Image 1 (cartoon, each protein chain N blue to C red):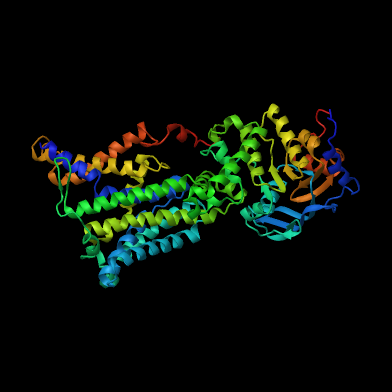
Image 2 (cartoon, chains in turn red, yellow):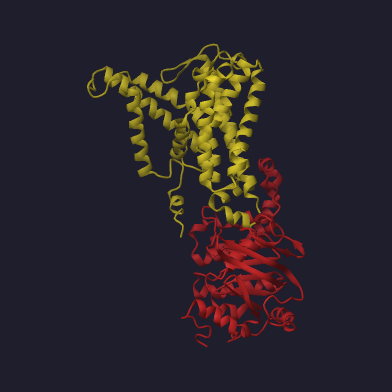
Amino acid sequence: MHEPKSPYKERAQAAFASISATPGVAKPDPIIIANNVLRQFGGLTAVNVEHVEIQRGSITALIGPNGAGKTTFFNLLTGFDSVNEGTWTLNGEQISGTPPHKVARKGMVRTFQLTKALFRLTVLDNMRLAAAHQRGESFIRGLFPAIWKRQEAEITAQAEELLTRFKLIDKKNDFAAALSGGQRKLLEMARALMVKPEIVMLDEPMAGVNPALKQSLLGHIKDLRDEGMTVLFVEHDMDMVRDISDWVIVMAEGKIVAEGAPDSVMGNQAVIDAYLGAHHDLSLEEGR
Amino acid sequence: MDFLFITQQSLSAAIGVNTIIFALAAIGLNMHFGYTGLLNFGQAGFLAVGAYSVAVAVVSFNVSLWLALLIGIANSVILALLLGVPTLRLRADYLAIVTIAAAEIIRQVARSATFNKTLGGSDGITGKFGKEFFDLNPFTSGLDLPFLRYTPNDLWVVVVGWILVAIILFLMWLLVNSPWGRLLKAIREDEDAVRSLGKNVYLYKIQSLIAGGVIGSIGGFVYALSRQSVQPDNYGTALTFFAYTVLILGGAARVMAPVAGAIIFWFLLVFVEQLLRQAVSAGYIPEWLIGVNQVGQIRFMLVGLGLMLLMIFRPQGIFGDRKELALDARA
């Protein structure tokens, strides 16, 4: 069932070969390092992560039962929510407490669990919007098309290239609202790439996507890694996690309870406990 | 019944001073609500600030009218900052609450006895503060056509007003078709998505609030200059909601919509009033049903009814695209 491994996958996995599968383990080349991240909602501790590192150039999956704090942790890292305590760095630069738009400018771009396509903008405008450093984004310069027309043409070319790759080019002049749920996921991912990120954070990229489109989404996520980007994603679909991730981090009740290579981590007792504790009806080995 | 008179009155109103004022107020709202999704319920406040800045500066402080206009624009920028800085980080509803309250505060302060000397209290300020403007009037006689009638001063205001509207619409058209405008529209659709792409949403919302507010205060200039007087109660919440009516009538997020909306609104308002007035005095409508003094209120009811019908049968407004409305269903 496994396709031939790509050289990128091997390289990414080789980086993990020498490290032990323990929660919070140090990685050879971390892009994100987080320390003592605590987020409480009243009496409820949503996230309490002592230490975690995300390896550069790899696909890391963040899994865990519902309510484990995965999305909250995502929101914290990307600046959409603020912590009670804790710090984290991106490329060695501290970014905790940075507002979301600045986080994105530093190269960390996210997508959302409930897809945020900009409905009454065309697919092409959704894409063009995301390009960084646009001259016409200033009020005064916006008034003079001569200043931004050429850059706009470059951005359009870039956007069309990405849309072609994501097979959305036929829809470029449609409103984003006219896309199907799966196509919106594709659009959101393609749009994130317009920012030219270093690390892409995908919050449940497969939720509500039909099986045919799933395969193409999987391919696109692998492509991101193969182009040198780091991918961190939250997912419930275990087949997908097994298929594409190089490393898996398991959260339960706000803590990181296990880490490891996809095949080994799913046999880990702590993981099984975490899932069974919350969902008695879920078998990780279902269908194997 | 004198249908020629009714037509003359209605058409003169349709492209008249009030239409210009409401078009400007609605163009500002179009920037706020139509393009950025900001619920500004205090547009009357911006018009009041524009109108009062001119009147107070010229009458109470003897400033030249042209400087007074600049002061008016500066004041409306300050008002936009005051309203926007604390609220635009919060959810959309907060801006709505703060703006409607602020507009009322401005009106109440303007009519308060405490500032009677400078702001004129509930009587407002009347005086020749538009003199410098009307000195430039090249029209020695007014317009007296069968279908259109203006005094020389009104004609001058109308001509300058429409030139102003045309310039502002042109700038607006440039802006909304620029990457800046695209950002505003994106913010209207989903702020968080725009943030996640590295754009400073807060900054753009403030810029939009300022730009729309300044356009509104230019409407206030026209209001004040055309009448050579300012009265606090002209700037009540009704003004804001009529401006919204005008905008939605034309179709939000369409550059030309406020102008079309304002023309239709004022045409209908005056047409219905004149028709009723003549029908009552000619005896077509019995006195016990509608008295002459009630015409003013009845016209608003009838126009309201007409607007309701329009919203039922053409909810997207004159220029809107019905398909776009359906897109709002979040799925």
